[in-house]
Image (cartoon, rainbow, N blue to C red; front, side):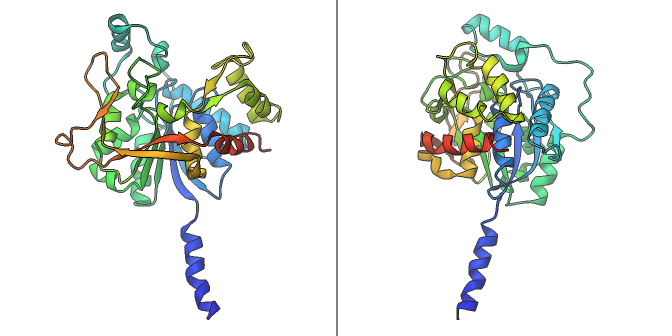
Length: 335
């Protein structure tokens, strides 16, 4: 009898294998995108990373690829496939951003628009959008997209192949803000603001599950100098990059010991490792304001007449930060 009961149990264990994931990101110098990738690549029992696609956002995509490559080499994972996708937002430009600043006040952060686009850069022969399309087709119904940058790559893929929307298991994304102010403008979070039109495509899509890690939950993840010191004390190649990036760049712990920062993308990655870090959430139909104006990139309620087949968004709100930080620190300091 026990022999026959064992078969369905083994089947359940097989089905509960690691989540197949594409990381779609805008890497800066060992920034939160790189940290999120490190977390997943060091959690093979939870995550099977099929590849990484790079998009412009924090930096221009060619530079972002170099940053992610540096992070992968630091943890001995240069074998991970990586492809550069869209190098510009669908519509937004640096000129538009400057005009927004002139009309409605200065930005807290202009991301890649702060620098000119690097001319004449080799980015490879195979595109990130092609990789997304091919992988979603191959793993239909069994692929999660971790979208932790502007959603340009995904929006282009959905416009080329609308059927892909229902072939994705879920999109877990960091972006947007519902009940708190923005961090690029007063109204918009930087990933959504950098490419509002792309974010709108995703929010209006038919993807079965959309899981949103916006500023509403990320603002609860306050990162302190004490926690920074605990991680950099490990003195590994990855933590040395972490020390330089967060010590001399944002939030500048080596310049001001009293400063604090926020954790963004690693929360979304952390959810794929341990969903119990989220303590509360709400389901909402959401849209993105893609009209050029003061609210460009802001999240708004969805008029469902405009997208009657759109699925709701699960907005993550409550956070068990202590639970998250315990494995965040463990994975970053792993040798």
